Image (cartoon, one colour):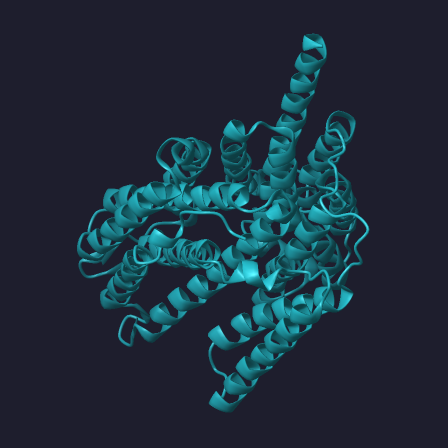
Length: 463
């Protein structure tokens, strides 16, 4: 009997390792486009808007797929749905890596956007196949490896594109994904579906997808600026109308796509608010700090090149990975409220310090790394605690909603930072003035400080 248990434990460790490699490859795939944008523009004959559309397609598809994948994973088993999603991602990789033009590449990226749903499915499998004491740690490690993949994608995109061709920035990560998926298939046992014999809430699925799609498009259009107020109002009303209809349908459904009672639980909405805040803050810094490295003004800016900026941003990425690795352990030892409260306080302090002190490059590097560490710690703590606070049958849908909220927060933060820099352009130098950067840092710091007011609701289960 003991030999059987040992064998099962070993199988579990191998399978969890494969999930980690899968997360690493998926994270790589999410970021390889950014460094290769100039080459893609030249090779495909597109402009900057077309290159941006490649990334947007991936994010929008991911936002739509994630909650559906999470719910289907809860209903039919995480392993089964994960394998289907990875088949879609693999097909998307083949299409993307062989695309002769932009439309075909966008089709490939639409298929590869399904990878965002892999995180909640991995959390389902981790929770079902590991003892409770190890679940939060494993979730932290998987999340950290996904973040590490983002660093790897940024690092390998240039050498792959220049040494081989741009096709390989999609092909190489896809090959790793295929291998890791095969290992998961062979080593991960089937997980028992949480819900049997219940009909799928297809109206809820369609309406939730439409609402999320409209929300992501609206965020990109409205925050991009230049839209007449009436158009902005119409877009907002359209998204609100879809959301209202979705809620009405879910309230009548016998087995709803999302249990609305669960959404009103303080532990969930507080986690959602803090998740959005952390994602927005990260995007704000991802925009402001490189720009400050690039510009050169009186008393601020450093006039650095792209390679130098990339090296100076690397410590923050490493800090985020380290924090993700220890986030689950921190939650296990101190509890989610203590971890999130400490992370929010450190983030607020670092950002407000950054608004005052930014005349040396090392100051930006250190404070950016501190914020990245605290932010990743918060995000991992929220995912790990939320995944174990809900009933096992709701692990996928709840964690996938948090993943979507991260995407929304990231879009809002990036557009907000861009707007602050645009408004703060100095007409003489034609570059953002120092007060624009200061305003961005202060606003981000205040958002972090405001998160402390909702931390007290994190304790408890969500039902």
